[in-house]
Amino acid sequence: MRDLITADTEDERVSAAFDYEVECVPLFTDHGPTRFFGTRRKDTDEIFATVTGAYEVLQNRQLVEAAEAAFRAKGMTGWKRKVVVTYGGARCYVIYDFPGIGGKVAGQDLTFRLKIQNSFDGTIRASFAIGLVRLICSNGLAMPVSTMNLTQKHTTALEIDFVGRTVEQALKAFFDALPFFESMTRIRVAQDEGELILKGFAARHLIGRRQAEAINRIWGHPTHEEDRDRNLWNLYNSVTQHLTHDVAEAPAKPRYEFAERCTRQITLAFLDATLAGRVDPLIPKNP
Image (cartoon, rainbow, N blue to C red; front, side, top):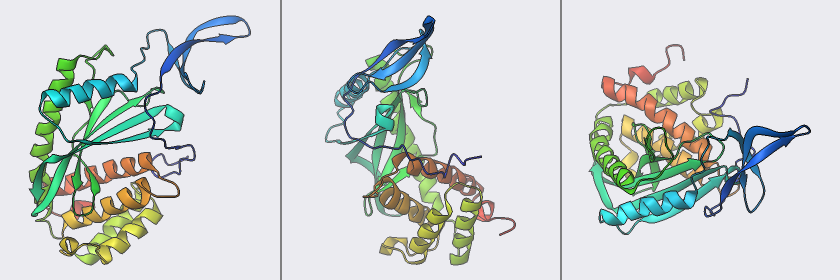
């Protein structure tokens, strides 16, 4: 059975063009029309998924316009936008970084990141995912909170007020998470414990073996002076440094979704140790 977390995704084509349109078209058999429809990208005719007549398409453009209107209404200006489109347009991620909104962990600046995610293959509901950016290395950090839906239950209709309230919730979640990351700095991790933890992550398929080895090299030889202390925060930054720069932004083959899955899984694992206040939950019982 393939490992859904660490398996290579050969079809993870990445593009930055999000303003394409998708429509629902009827599907036919040799005997005539069926009750099913296909979600089809208009400019390429690629079919992404089979859906029923109840499915409503929510265009990427609609989400971007609604989110940016909410940002402006709340005085959130000066954002930087990056777009990642995968699987030929089946999934879209619009990532906003806000340099003017942030806080500190261990004296280091972290800024607010908000990601719109949408899909036309049924894999992702239109939602916000909250993150942080560590400025000294531009690492992307995941948040130990769930995504926030951009449409209300039982409807795909976009309501600006609802989107605006969701933005407010995202901002609150960002500031509420800063003490969580700060507490990671107080949990000591010996050099060999970090190596065992990374091997354990690979054994549990939270990351691949090659990723664990690459992260361990960063852990053993930190790129930044701020990362030389041996604690959980700096082990986490070793993970995010590799996944951000060597996986998600790899020049030859960027693997954004793979990096995001790994970051999410690792963050949840670190959450357990942080709540316990000790590194023990992360160390494999039988290394």
